[in-house]
Length: 202
Image (cartoon, rainbow, N blue to C red; front, side, top):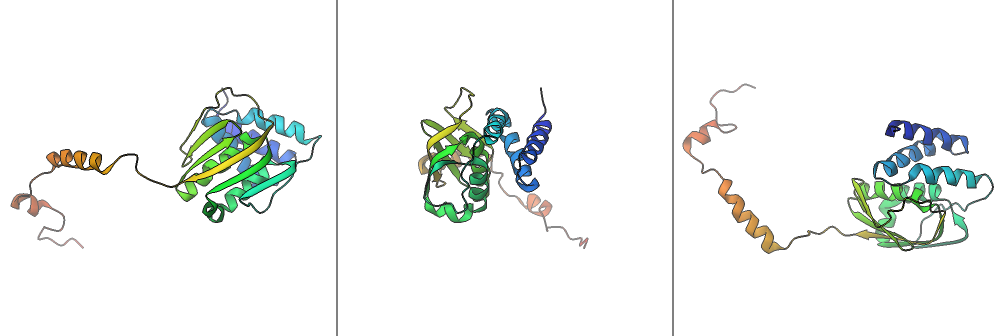
């Protein structure tokens, strides 16, 4: 089995070889590592994308808007780089749409990293496939086939506001239960507490 370090390195070098700058190639290496770590077919999709890139042109996007559409399929790498660069601004849009995105699996790790930056979960749909990106710590999905996706007709990105998964009643009940672990303060404990000593060591 190849190590994640090897995967990162080969993805980075291959990306430079097809024409990306070393800076973007570094980003791609990290991303493929993330995909493989989370069990998604990053290397397979990257390889197929680079074979397609030899014979087909893809549309670059510089400024991410709420609705993004192109007759020529968007490049998932440039789309992802600019999404990540603009995340603090486009987060305010709440929902973002891309029509006609090539090899969308390669777009996912940019969103996963964006989730960590803004401290919010991101819900992503690639046509009928769903992904929940959790602060770059995990990815939940109904996409289990591991097949290569050469295009997604409609991509939806939704930023999820942070909220508790429990109600106040549950919190109160557990807090009261936790009070059983509290230690009653005594004069002896006070003397042993921080700052209670008579000797100044500063």
